[in-house]
Amino acid sequence: MHLAAIAPTVTRMSDPRAALEAIGLLPDTEIDIGDAALQLARIDAPNADWHAAREHLSALARDAVELAGTIGTNDLSMRAEALAGLIAGRYTYAGDADTYDDLANANLISVINRRRGLPVALGIIWLHTARAAGWGAHGVDFPAHFLVALEGHSVQAVIDVFGGGVTLDARDLRVLLKRIEGQDAELRPGLLRPMNARGVLLRLQNNIVSRRLQSGNFDGALACIEDMLRMAPDHADLWRQAAVMNQRLDRVGAALRCFERFLALVPEGAAANRIRGAMEELRTRLN
Image 1 (cartoon, helix red, strand yellow):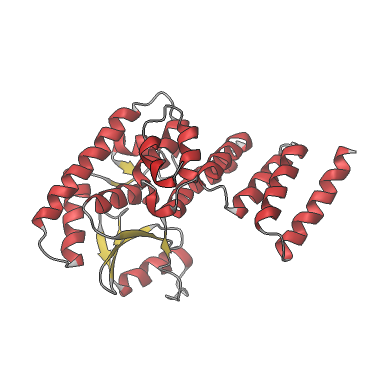
Image 2 (cartoon, rainbow, N blue to C red):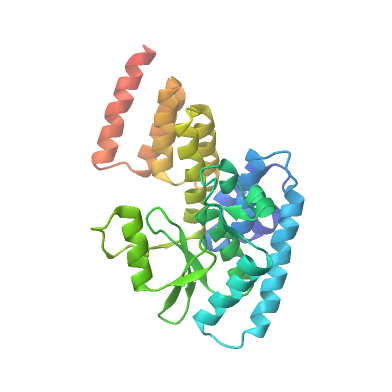
């Protein structure tokens, strides 16, 4: 099947994991970030009303199209203000500072129901809406605080979606960085590195992995990594993480298979040599 023909079928799949595997075959530019996050949410909340969540995403898209028709300019500040009025204003989305570590903040269905979430979960709502309006936008891999950037001609507007859609200038970004990394931190190249759709989705799921690990839920953390691999099968470090988690759970055969997948993607270098050493040690446990 041609890849372009896969995208329309994803939303019709009854099994969310099958949908993730279909997403894993798509080039990044063809990923519907809202629907992909919805498939991830369905896995962790199988009894939630995901159809209502999808209808909400459709409503946001329709409103975004209408909004774009009223903005007769390429001015990024006006676009940012309009999106904030729609998402944070009309729909009351906001960051959940009170129960920040609640796993519900990383589940798109729960975020839609509660209108509260982590920065990256809210960012997916913003990216979905901006793209529906026909406006270029991407995630920003800022340290410990996901941001969204609206794209213009050789310029961008960086938005704090957790803070209600405030546009951040260089001074604001410097203050934010110091709050995260300490008073000695300064702006440096790479801080506003753009993220593609797949990268944003992986960052969303990394929040779940880290919280499950903190609570000692190693099986749950591994299951989340395996779902991440369904939509990012060529992500070498995820195969390494899956191998380490299987090793920790004493699943030696599974760990070896995951290490082999890592080496297929990264056959040379220091990391590959370390993996080969770890595999030799694991094989001794099979004898």
